[in-house]
Length: 73
Image (cartoon, rainbow, N blue to C red; front, top):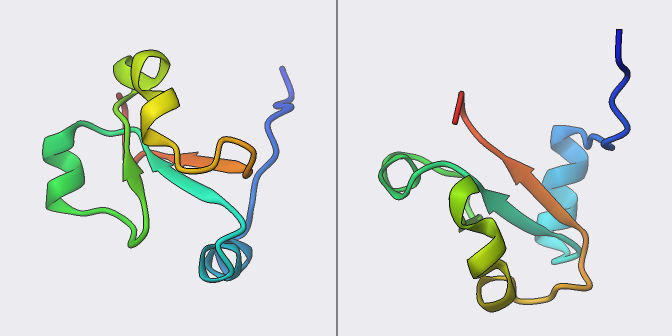
């Protein structure tokens, strides 16, 4: 079994970091799914568009980035 080396964050830590503006939250779902429901403060960059859009869409590329999706993409 492979162990993930990607760090995780708890819901309460995520909420605190968002309030303090210490992270950038990126929703990687489709624009339609993002419009239907997303976490407040999230930026929508669909998975297929991360590479071409990240430079323009991320407000502070030095800030830690948290990504999420609501299902398979």
